[in-house]
Image 1 (cartoon, rainbow, N blue to C red):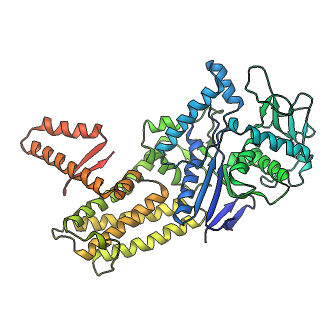
Image 2: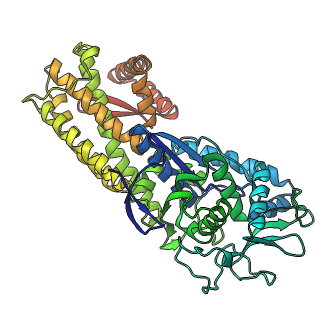
Image 3: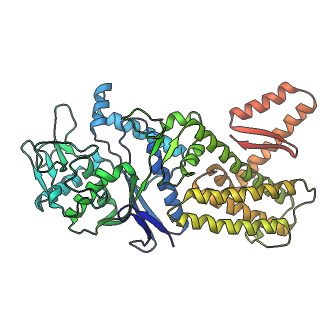
Length: 497
């Protein structure tokens, strides 16, 4: 049974979907006024793993993630560059996709924008006014009245006598209560504005996510997520305005999941504080899968301190897992050389051989891997089981590669099963994506491998002829193309960089 930590109840709960066989998810997206930083990336990597877990369990997953493309910071950036707000938003949305694609994050089912959801936002605000939960002030601003919602504060645990309004909640003497928050802001000169019953203006921050999640997922959906910094005021306000508009305290998201902060020297990373690293800058130094691996080595609810040293440690750990993957593919090549029937490869047989012992270990660790993920998506523990399997693969590989005898039919079937288990683990946490694609197209993989064997043979011939310049030129050109050659006691191995 899958258990998740629900921020609303502050405890782990068994997950029960609203609709059998389906999972609906809304994750708060970015405000595209600058390059996304590594802290922005953490919730999206987290939810990507969660989506993969549910898909693996056979659920049909509907995942929605918004873009806040109408915002004070976007307007300020546009004025600074003397361009339109839309140019700023479009530019950094494109940059966001480039960064997230590099992190192997699968695309959402929809990416609604605030600018494209105005009708729904305005209708929701009018509903709140009509029901007495919101009020208009003299200049055309509209506020939500927190005192009218008897359940306000249930997510964060804050009370109305806690007069500190919090981040991005404006203090305004026109409010009936200091914690009332803006639903609609009257237009200011030079800012983007849309017509409404209260005059030209634009939405407040919180109303957008309520309108978009309800539009795409309905009045009740399974999960709502984001960073811990969104618990208050953003998610608290979303709950209040949504449930008041619907008229049902039990509507809206059923489970609230929040990832921990990324820190720099134990201080929260943020653009406003200036202590941040953009994903783009990090990707200039490290492959996307290394950055992704760094983010999921720690449980999503735990804080994660970022440093160059931590990234290097993640790179080293990832390389160990990658080496085991390469060893499995080398073993597969040895199986192919033994002419094992492709039709029999799916069935694993337990024998007295070391391969039989390996598959027993692999099956046990696969179960432990999924048990860890069923415990509130504990990627840190799941990855530790993958490392256990990696160690066993390495031991078996070195025994097998030093044995001149061909792999027998039964052992070959087992090796294929172990390969499938290892790649299944990798697929859930989202690494080795290129290798997964290669496995899915055996003919293409074999063609590439055959071509590499020819290239390696030519390089070896040059070395034997002591034509070092040619040998080095082949190696260097392969490196530029993203192929690394490794000279080992068993011969030359190649892998993608």
